[in-house]
Length: 215
Image 1 (cartoon, helix red, strand yellow):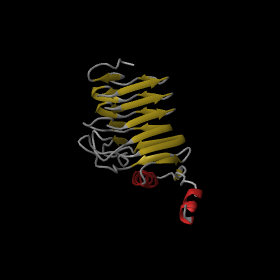
Image 2 (cartoon, rainbow, N blue to C red; image 1 turned 135 degrees about the vertical axis):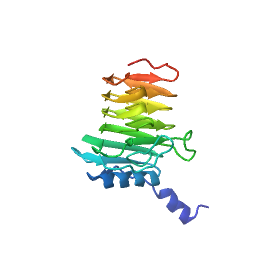
Image 3 (cartoon, rainbow, N blue to C red; image 1 turned 120 degrees about the vertical axis):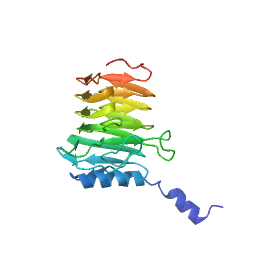
Image 4 (cartoon, one colour; image 1 turned 60 degrees about the vertical axis):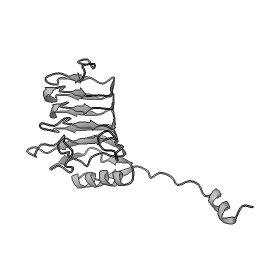
């Protein structure tokens, strides 16, 4: 015989995942939103349209790769904008924009970063890797986005050692002091779908071993 409590439980629909979270146009609002999404196990953030989020300081000490302008991505987080830019402030100390952590880098992390119609500008990892994005064991997907004017030792625009998919996006005018001005693939896979990687120095793409052609 089924109890009334059991019938009530069967009649109750499963809880729905929270909808996209709007993020006001400020550095602190974006930092708080990323921290909140990580704490919740992931989330979808709607960034303010026609906004430039200017990062004046690092908000993550990072690992051996150095600091990041935003908290490290350790859970599945998507960000969507409309003519929206995330930029390191002129004259700010060097830091990359994003670090995405996965189990190979941090056993507790399952970072997945999805960027839709966003631009990342002026990230600077210094002697570290990935001026725009350092994908350290996570998953990164870009759609209709741009990584530009960023710098690092390897992967001025993007450094990846797991999974990177770049669709209908651009990676341009980035600089590496060692290799892979645009994208540096240390391991894993890189898939470019209608996504020009151009005008990067000293090369557009590089890899270890050199399996990714200069794209």
